[in-house]
Length: 431
Picture 1 (cartoon, helix red, strand yellow):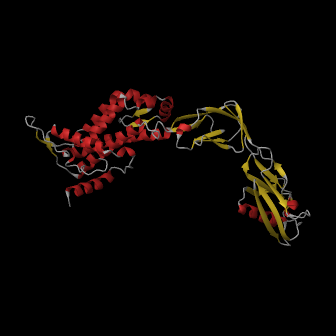
Picture 2 (cartoon, rainbow, N blue to C red):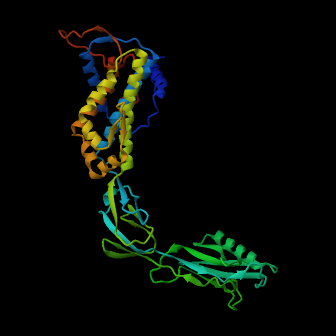
Picture 3 (cartoon, rainbow, N blue to C red):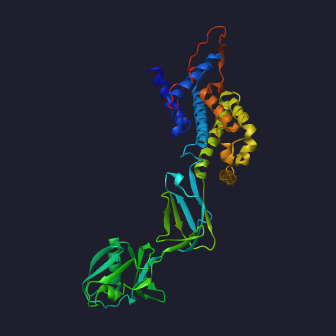
């Protein structure tokens, strides 16, 4: 087995002790970036002493965890500083000032087509058509047995039905059977049996359209017997009696009256608006960065930061080594604590990062968090730089015996992977 295979086995064995990590676009690198990493390591080793490290499983697990957390830490910053259209801050989410009355949801990928924020006031919702048939006693009998044919028109579609009635069938059997028969056809209308609240022995069939709205007030569906003598199933049950006509919605968008057949409509193929209830006041629809996605990236940073502190403290107990990593990362972030706390970051008594979600959401909507997470901000440059240092040379944070200093009187010689020679980090799908 070659050295590379051994390193791969070591890496694959020890990494699961840290945590599984999904790959992201920030884990892929161009050839030029990989060359830069090798050059950085070469430069580092040319200027560093030669060390001897007494390796064990605890130390290797710790080193791999440090490197993994540094990569996750850096990726969290990359996600928040990304300026591509699908990045965290560029990915928008629609917000309604009253979701009980009007909902809004982004459905398209091209968010450049989103409208500007607008107000909407709902005067009335779009209504379906309801037909209510004749009330009959459940045990009564009034319809002769035989085969009955009738027609249902739903929109522009026409459906022919044929229903058989036994000679001894009572009203309960006829209505229940017919209701189930129509529903199974799945033609855009739904039927159900309703009892008279004052006399449960009397029932009728209620028919309602799936669709809503009508441009000119015409019915959405009609029912008619094919037997023109007046002895048909529709006429006996009076299923053609309209109790409520369909109605289109009426609402005002930025003061301009609009109508829709449905209580849902799409704007620009990327925003779905749902009318839920009439309102007396304007409801504002606005677009803000997707807070869920931003909070997810922030949590990634917090998890990686907290893990570095936890693993540093745990390793110090096992190895009787100082808390160099914990002290290093805390010293790096300390100058920026005031800015972070104003954006909802909370440093608890153990110096672990948590979040005041309401304050963080406010910072997201006010744009303050985005100002903090720009590539040019001192905070991002400092923390990403520190993450890169840790990722490049996790061996800095374990005890080791120095062998020799580099001889600067002679041309320097570098060994590109000396920083990870003993930790099983040569083979790594990140680098």
